Image (tube, rainbow, N blue to C red; front, side, top):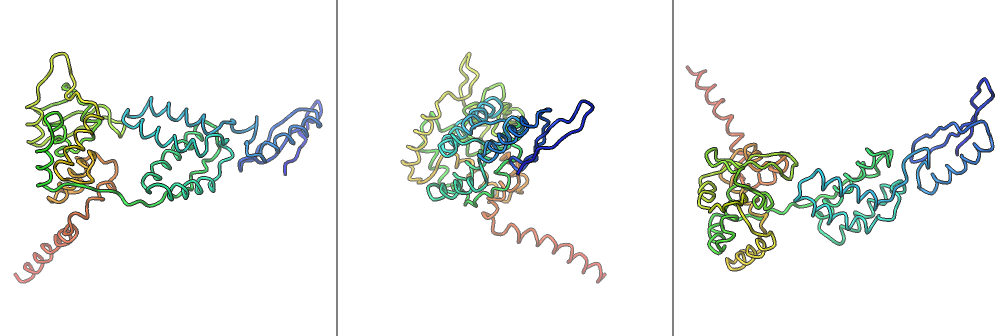
Amino acid sequence: MGRIYAVPGKKGASWGIDYYADGRRVRRIIGRDRKAAERELKKAEGLAASGQGAGPYGSRRIRFQALADEYLAHQEATGAPSSAKRYRTALKVLVLAFGDRYLTSLRLADLERYMAARLRAVKPWTVIGELSVLKQMLAMAVRRGYLHVSPAQDLRKPRGEYRIRHLDETEMHLLLTFCNDKIRPIVSLALHTGMRQAEILGMTWEHVRLDERTIFLPETKAQEPQTVHLNDTAVEELRSLPRRQGDSRVFRIHPRMLNHYFRRACKEAGIPDFRFHDCRHTFCSRLVALGANLRAVQALARHKQISMTMRYAHLRDDYLGETVRLLNGGRTGQKSSQKS
């Protein structure tokens, strides 16, 4: 319940209003007219009770649809082009759920009900992706003054089982055998570098440094420049490619055609349930299985967090056993020194 209060002054008292909206206390001087202050308090309390925030004295009134438009425009201007499709897909579902709602009317319970409903319809990792976009949107709303506090700040995402599909050495050679000449170098490069499809198709010759055995990526999913390191196979693949005069792109093929040829090659090779992005999983899995240090794999895969790389640690059952046995040498050495 709000109240009006008097503020003494040399020319008489002024009247203010004091009430709560969106969990925040709002105090505002109205003027010398007590009746006007009473009317403003009644109006402000009505706005707060209807979930429209603090009216003219608090957050800007904005619908979820408008915020979604601002968020997408911001991501397209600042993010990696390959991420735009993912944002649009998630926003389409979120707008269907919340599009007409005012931001100040959203509560944690609304978001939890949305999450529960989506988990009944789609896989957990799909829901996790949508909730990540939702959290980013509402955090932006706070930064821009549309909300005082994000209702998603305490939202706990569901746990999902990450899909890791990878090929062994025999399957790799089999897949490459059935790839036609248009995509075989692309698939080989993906398997031996862990590069994403958009990164490979966006490559230009000016960023391929064969003498240094690296590829420079000015734009990536992480929204920062990165360097890819090449093994012998990747270097030979790139050296064998023809360079077209006046065309700086390494590969000229539309993603849809690449995926079409790739699916056909998998079918002919008898390799089920394998997508192009799984070439990246194969790259990481092979490194871990061959005994590579997980920190090195993280760097080569360009994972921001080691937790992303740890998903592959189970492929080496002896990883922790070998590590703890490193202490054996120290103990043995200590015993031998005591005998001497």
